[in-house]
Length: 336
Image (tube, rainbow, N blue to C red):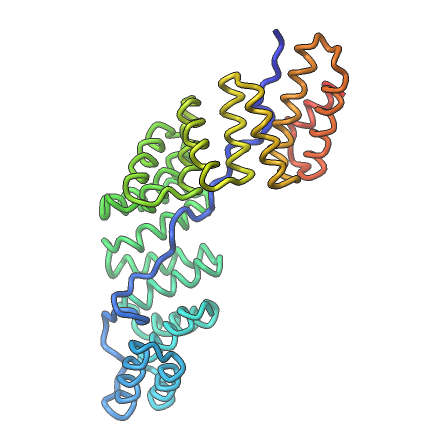
């Protein structure tokens, strides 16, 4: 019996998040980074303003803290801790652009200050200046080579740029530094997947499930790794768990793919349709519907013209949404 392969119904693997980790801070004082270097020169009133600012920041009074740090800088413009205090406030308020400038100034004044270099990298990363962020993370690692968060973040940054060899070096180091970190395991799993090391990716996702919440991102990545190892029953079970707790178009579409590979075609169609109910323009699910309808047409000895027409309509709609689908264009050319 002729069967259209669903492998052409979707271009590539489900895209994982470009940054498969939480870009967290590494501060150990509320609202302020732990400081590794001395402040800039000065023993006068600027130090009193600096201390008042740090006290206000710990107390949660950011407006007063900012005012005190700026007063300190008006007296002594090279007071590193005051620059860092201002930067911390901007960071906590989500003003990453202004925070980046202040962290950059602190890092320039005191290159050996780990916090200045690390947080500068973090702000650049959050501003999507990924190449610049890598440079800052490397400067932070020159001060503290075994800092876990810096290794994790720079691995994620290299992964975003598609530089998997470098992402692997730092990703593996992050896992060695903190074997119980779920985000580090997810990050390394994503790198392994990109490198075609699918068995190792599954192992890392399995480890991650023991150390972190079963988030949709984790379960989707795990399911994709299982798919790449032809473990479709486990893929189906993982996605069934996901659609019960956090239904989404990608989760239903991937579940449809698993059903299709297990030759459970009615369930596959139901999953693709569920994806489209959530996102009517989710083109991978349209491709899935199109392939299922083409199979119905073939299995009817090409008498079910309605199935063929529905397939063509779904595939045409998919191409209208995303023109960059050469396999779908080829499929339409063959069957329309």
